[in-house]
Length: 495
Image (cartoon, rainbow, N blue to C red; front, side):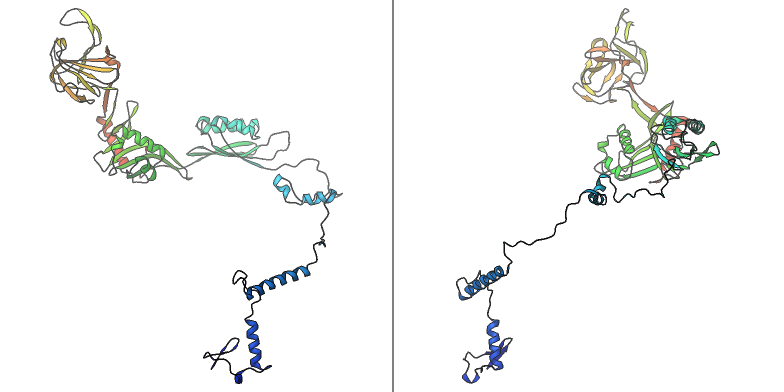
């Protein structure tokens, strides 16, 4: 048996080729066998494998032969190959090439040839001017309007006329710094004279645009009102880990958020507002028909959705603007609280003692009040003494840290003990008539570094309460603000 492959015949069965089947020279079978032998001959074997074998030596011989053939075919190391090199440019040729190069462009140069003037070129007798010049510039302030016009090339007469026209519509002080001016200067007949002002336009106010135009030899003013929609901006959202970041992420302006936090801090500790609370911010806003937006002051500060509910709105009363809550109560003012509700019946200083009958120093003030009226701690402190003290009767002394202390005498009863910590406004006793006293009242003293000073030299805190018509108007305004939808205003805000 025999098998056929790509190179010819292969004999199978492991037996040798019989003489009968041997290929005769010149036959097709003989040619195929030769082709197979040359096909199996590898003239360029891998020199990294089978080192020292006959195949390896044959590959080395092939490599040496190819290198020798390459060396024999080379022109020789001593025979150089000559080429053509262009000569360096000089003179006029260099100037022409440099003028048309790209490199001068980086240094502000121009490229190309400049053609010399011929007989067809007539020299100009005068330099031509642009017929119209348009300028835009920013005002440093409204008062600088006239000087800015003169620096721009406007004549003194035109500048004065513009100033007279503008002041009829708006004062220079009302023009905001940074206002952009668009001016157009016309053609002049004489170069010795300034260009005439043809047109000028600028935003005089947020709600007013002014245009000055030339008609003949006169300038006229045109006032263009800009429609303004006064709509409060309302922003609400949940208080997350940071009240400031939560409000800013909801779209509240940065200055409004800062004012909102300062306002809230006067009524409730901001750090105690948990994630369950919701902030409510209303800011004054003006939107122009031209698209500009101006944000004003904070109009409302509120907290809802938790136990620390707050509703605060500014209100002007007696010529002073204060923040009041939904019930019309204002902020407490002053360093110390009033120790009791009553009237001042005796002041600090030298006086004739009503019982002893001679003049001596009165180290405090007397506040007349009915027997049993509550007595409050003027500010935070610690009870230094609580008990009986000769002419003071029942006496309480509080230490407020630092240099200050207070005393409360002639009490009918004492409800605190030595060493107890008290808060501002906490009940510590009641008005009485104990000790050297001619009637129920509170003897109140203030100490600084252990020395008695006039208690009225330190302002007592007071709480303002709106009543009557003011309270009704306040609640009406608050109701109007609370009806504003989130994200926009439903009604015009009254100034």
